[in-house]
Length: 455
Image 1 (tube, rainbow, N blue to C red):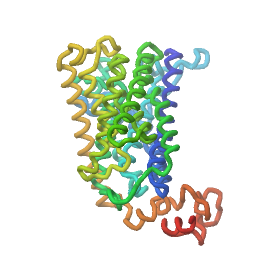
Image 2: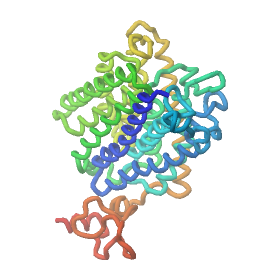
Image 3: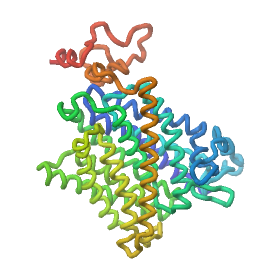
Image 4: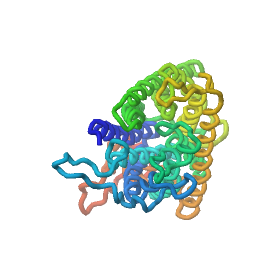
């Protein structure tokens, strides 16, 4: 066990965990004021649901020894994290008895857990304003079990020894996905598209203005995401070494170029460079560099970030062309950005980077390009089809979408009996109200009444 590597990975795990509250702010600021609490709760609840499942069996499914063709880890091997606890005692400085490379297995468990959490949380942006909270919790549990955990095994579970066999994308296909372009972003983006189709369009989609209600919160959320993303990418080196440093710089470079790319696209297309565009550009660059950060030079990272931002900025308009209501552009940013980054490795990879592979533009031919394409396409198809099945099953059994009247009134009030900005009544959180209803008798019962009272 290396104490420096252990400290680095645990720090990065904390950074990645911070990304989910950052995502809650980012998404929460982008919705209308009557939906902000529900939007943030969908991210926070993902932390709770996925965290429990990860301890019980999620880690085992993702990183247990393969049980067939690189598709699934053994669910019972690390059930309840058995076999991963234990140290040699205080005299030996609590050296872990179970290791993953040079870090305690439990540090690796913690680091991978926060990846699972944010992947589920990302999906929620596609169904903002119209999803019931209880069915969302059920969806999060089922989707993590049948989609994320197996896909994480495909992508992140590397063969460690002859008796420890991992996933097919990592070990057989040999596609490069350093920190989750397929397992996280393409996975969540495809699921977001499927779920948006299942739930249908919001009331007033393409008719009513649905502008972000709080852009400063959006900017703050984007900043926290960017901060945490250094743990996401550089932490995936699983060591405090030169690769982590290279990945850190590539992540910075791609994100900076992406902001400029998105703003330039807005300026040319719309005549304005917006704060929402700057925040979205940062996220698009972070998404794109995630799979590629170990395979590109710093200049290649600048190119990838800029191109990804331009393509993502153009892609967010596809929902109006094709008529699907992806509320917060999970498809346009995460699916498209993940595809650009994953496939971009096949073009821009340089053997001078730590991945040691040349892409098409560096004289490597199409060998890595076809591997990247198959990996991206397989995850996209699997996630989309399984999410359609899960979403339809929940919709037809217990109902997934909020009723039209409730949607117009506001999902915060209907699902949580709260309002984010409560200036005139006691409709805030009920904590501390013993024996009393959290809703005062005089509380307005409709969004229209609320707005009238404010006026």
